[in-house]
Length: 322
Image (cartoon, rainbow, N blue to C red; front, top):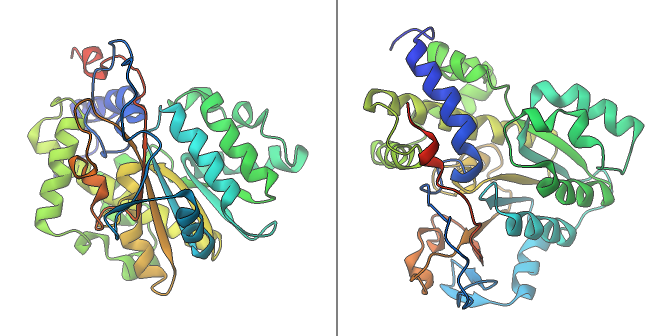
């Protein structure tokens, strides 16, 4: 492995992260050019709910029943899709728990922002209006704060605590040099064993997703490193969530939410008796009118899929001219 002062690789990491993480769902989707006009005819799957275990559509009441029993609820998003954030706010509202009993973890916040988050909430409890400015959201590279503010406000309305799930960005470089110990202590490493969590075939699948979600711009020798970083993120976020409390909601990219090789893989290790429910919010594809056309409907991937309209966006790959 090259040292972390491998400048070309660092350049790729920085540029690709800034340009792509808002549309890739954290390795859950390939880039798609949606610059054309929205279709005049509504897609037949939009707003339908699919129960993966039953291989059938269900009504909202059945999803609500699953939320009522869940200890941990993962809401897998495409980061820049406004419909996904509207759904998240609704699902947070349906999740039950008295004040202070639920920790809501956000991939979009890292631990370096925790002091600013705590200061703001101590001075403005229950008010998400200025929270984005307090944590410098505009400088984070995530989609506009206005998309996420309703989710945060719903969390605060319930009297729950929003918590950062991610490690600080510069620690990704340390992972390349030190391995998983750069972000996980000895206790976490012993329990989670992230180096053995994914099979060779799963690692290969993640490499393929990384290749497509990064527009084919990553040199092949970097793909294994990106898999290590992705796995470290999943393990770290599971650990951070469990440390925050026995019940929680996780607002994360769909790739991180998937059951087979994402955060739930590590949550099950930490909390084997917990009821973990994964809801994937999936953008419909033109011409893909059956649930079986979408990998997220597999029981190994999610428990429930909510189909949504696609977000109109520019082609992210067009910006990568280096």
